Length: 79
Length: 79
Length: 152
Length: 152
Image 1 (cartoon, each protein chain N blue to C red):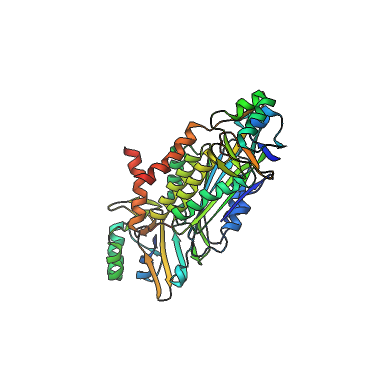
Image 2 (cartoon, rainbow over the protein chains, first blue to last red):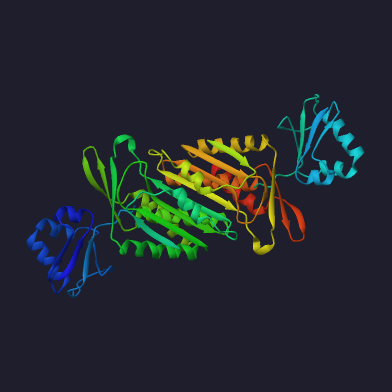
């Protein structure tokens, strides 16, 4: 049960911004979200979208534990 | 009776900062001040000392009328 | 050094009053206040989203780098998040240094970073609805000024 | 646009509060506060002499030039005169513009002018007595930055 957070336009695409989702790997989580909502899947793979696990930016796949906070971050616009 | 103002170190040299002095020309005023106080005369002719008549910087000699404000301005240091 | 986010409007002057107290050895305090522009009615509100914790930590890293690079005595960053009405302050940066050049440069540098790369997501609410704003080329050009200075 | 001298100490924050009000089309407000430094006891007080009327008028000419050159919406300069204790503000400059680069540059330019060429005469009172301060080379170098920009 990772905690998944969507920021910026991603939460507009998905219609939610904060959900608990059960998934052992980041890759599996992406697949699950894409299967459920193709538009969101495409947006998550869009140019410049980064992933943070427990507030640290990661690249590639990673194992998730039940308490992991997974944040999908579109390009940051500055304030 | 021009009104003579001294600024910065000039008033320290002279021991005054604001006096009424009768003089028809700036050159005559300078001669009068120098005759009275040689140290002040030297300081007034020092490097970078400017003269303002009625708050306008002038070079060379000028006629003074009784209401003229004559200010001797040492190099400005900024704030 | 303080980096904070707030959902509430704030008074830049009150922050400057507090920040400039007791600085008898500092000499120089520079500030910048960014104010939400009305754009003559084109913008009804600006909305800024942050990732709480992450956003402060990322800004804090850059702020700490600026503190060292410019030899600052202190700095303060307060950034609005949530919906911001035209005329309200969006961001306030204050820098304290012994010499004014360092205070100015650090403030300028921090603003370039905050406006271009800080972890915010920005939405403009206008008369025709809302849209997300992507980073502007000018912002990246502004930030590049500081990179060039480091390498040359 | 406002250029004023004061014999009394003042609160830079209160000036910023007033200056940043009602600026829904401005976007950017930069400020600089110069504070009298204690220099670890070497300076007991700073004393600044102005030529009332002349000093404000001369500063006003440069300020008006800056307003046009940097496209400012507004600017404010308040300068202390008389005896100033360490830790007290000496000068406050605020600039308002649509874009932050212009606000920063104008504020920086005005400070370079005020610190190097504005019509003040400066005396430092230290433990060994008082001495008049001549313009520093660094101040002239600072000001030269702006001249070069004009001619190139």
